[in-house]
Length: 368
Ligand code: IPM
Ligand code: MN
Image (cartoon, rainbow, N blue to C red; front, side, top):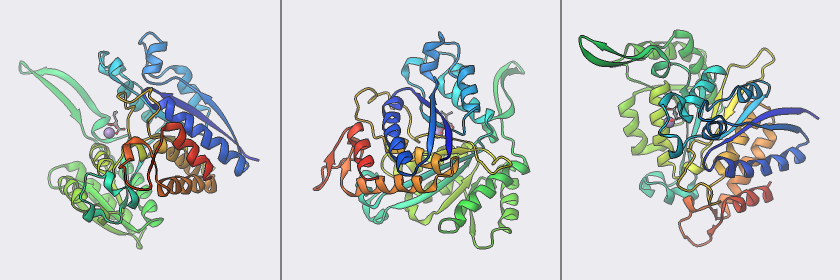
């Protein structure tokens, strides 16, 4: 029986509530598919700031615990309680960005899936997405304008100036392109690379490198869109897309747009992956695409599906427990198909049953 180790970081807001449901699901699949998972829980985000007297959102012990694990299951961080703190120590910038950098998590996979049964939850007109859609956004996560140097404020010629620098190295573009082409190969074999090559030097290089990498994937059809156009095309007809690959900033924006049009943030997982080690194991951080949702935290009504599907991604990409991952995904499909709905996806149609967080978790476990 294989033994896996995961670091669990519930964080803030609805994080701990939805994490509890992921635990139930993990317990059920590990029994069913006969593998063992040791889990250790660590503080992150606002919870860590509270525990350290506002010193850090990412304590040493958390980092160390994560280093010793095979993967990280992450809840969510942040909330109004910590917004008065200096931006650099706030949960988002003080925990999430340093984690990505520290573990070299350069590949961010964000599926934007609109289930055919849930098209009413999408703000897009039903007739445009009658069969739902399934788009995968592959976002470069440790480069670009988020991390480029210099990054500073200073006074130039007597005036205050803020500077962020957008840098992409050929090697960074190449490795994210490979991730995206491989993902497309396993799906509908269509990859759209999004850039702003009519303005940015970064994007000119981006496009060149993506075109070069494409030669290694002749079965994948590659297209290119400028980011402004991509934002429009996604709203106009998301089913046209299969896999999107783009840089850090554009991916941040487009993945939120995709999440919005797919209906509920509470449904979408994400994976942030590093480079595979010499034995082929991939370390990753897995988290819901939605945030900590402080407005509904503590009420037991949040949708745990995004956290549960993040667990499925963790099982697939880092623990290589594919069967368990697929079982979770089909159990979620079934629960949705059977009309089980948390408030965010409830539309009071016939056949729907409104449930709370733990009832949704239980409904999924029942269907495993
Ligand atoms: C995300 C978030 C983060 C980002 C913030 C919180 C730093 O918006 O994961 O998309 O911009 O990457
Ligand atoms: Mn974002």
